[in-house]
Length: 519
Image 1 (cartoon, rainbow, N blue to C red):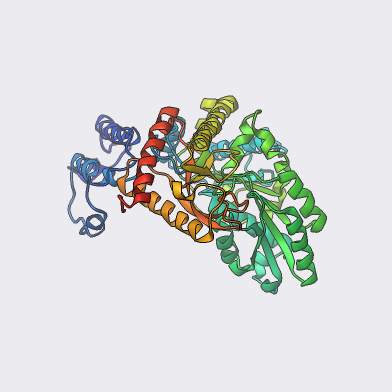
Image 2 (image 1 turned 45 degrees about the vertical axis):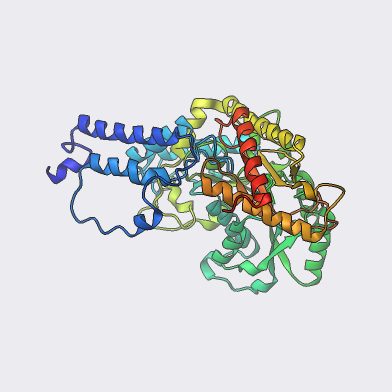
């Protein structure tokens, strides 16, 4: 074979041969996505053998590479699209989203520059941003009547980024620039020890501390405010603002969660907004809605998000809740013009007005990842996505009811969205209450149950430590406990799957409790 035969394009590999190879790749992908087992623990190469493989020095026929991939590597990869994957809402199995992902790689446009890299793709991405602004409740930016190079991106009220981490980082940058204009150019010239960012205690997302570190504000300057029912305790929050003023501190940003990363509880967005604006009008209000913003598609459920349009910025993660493949996040702002303060300047590749790369923190060249969301929106429309979201919420309520009816388990959260957190409670702990030592033993047991489920690979659920802030366990005090969590993220999860899973989990839990199973 000539070297040219390895490349797709004019006079490269033949179209028929390229199509055959790619058809086989697609078949492998479909076989993987269709696999019921979460992963095959005993099939394929062990991870240590994979990492210790030597450097490939000679060419290998593509069919041999694909054979090896199917036999040795894919079995050990977790399949998030399996209906047995019950830990996160990251299925990535939307055919529209997958189609957009494949097509965008073929197109290979670079969103950094609109004139010669992504002329139409840039406008498609801006359309996606405007669609989601409308869904959230922000005023839609005025579209341009025709494409002109001198047109600005100042009316584009958001960005398409590579995940919620980047979106939350963008919020931190804007909060910093509002509080200390020009820091992007001059560097940090203020006493960071007096600058604070508020998050809810115990349910914050790690990206906030990381964002503060990256933008020079310092991760230690994050304040965790008390919660009640996995929302801000607003009385305690008001006292926190007063104490900050008395100490000469400045709270420049507060983060609220429309679906916190543990229980998916939706914050009282309107009440929180009113409190913060009364205490500190210049504080940047950011809503991390990576999960919960999908409720805005549903007329039946969007009331949970009442007040979200009042926030300075909102994060949306379609790769979590809309089944599009990784990575894809939207960062939206109430007033598009505020984004000017984080523009990147370049006289080489980003001088054109519609170059979206001017406004993507820490990213220059960027793939047309918005294509997967554009395809999803076109294929399903708002009504189709609303049906998907409502089905997800209904499935969570179904599983929550199953937990309530089974005396072996205790529900930890009020299910508002797609997360059901619970613990297994052995018979010896059931009754009017338990001691602190029993509660600690219960926590260890539930971690052991999770490890056993993980070791077998048939199903996957999540486990983490969270405060039992409403004393549901009944040990007489607030207590942090290892919980198990089901999330109804995959549209293919059925009630029959949940019945089978709960039976499977009950056997493992009973045996772990009696000492018959050890991970």
